[in-house]
Image 1 (cartoon, rainbow, N blue to C red):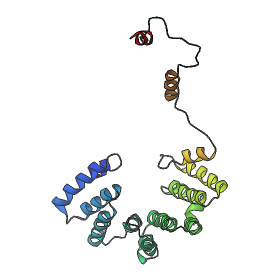
Image 2 (cartoon, rainbow, N blue to C red):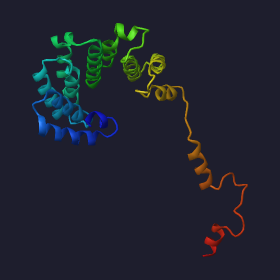
Image 3 (cartoon, rainbow, N blue to C red):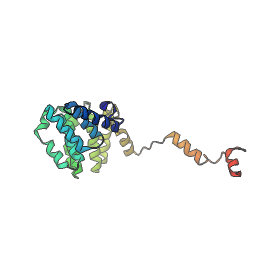
Length: 218
């Protein structure tokens, strides 16, 4: 239930995780699920504690990037950077190492080190033309860092590359790209409702005997 609800109903997922923790707190998967649910609800101290417990039980380094991001959430970017340079990072698979790079870049931005954040994201994975599960998020983070540093032209290029890789809409890269291009999307329904509220173009009149006429008389 945690896995089923966590994206659409994180509070509901958190509630289920608390029940699971009461019933089976010595099961690593339960502690991990509790960590994910707390993380989704921005309860970073609780998430970090659960991730640490799961890691002690399994000995796996897979949760290391999430633990580092919890440190960011707790206002400790320096600790997140320390974790990015720890030996545990070398035990991660490629996806985990990319995730750790994203966390490290975020920590640099938290500290106001925009140029360092950009350099942190520059990697063979970023330069590769092949599309992997992490490609869209990596390109998006790089574009966002460039934009924050005032490098708008480069940012637009990388938002466009993020759109190319984002087949499942995991980022809002297309919206960011449209914003940079000055494109505004207007909801036709809202536009019609607005026209009705203002009486349309002004050429049309309410028919005799309409509710508006009767309301005026009343």
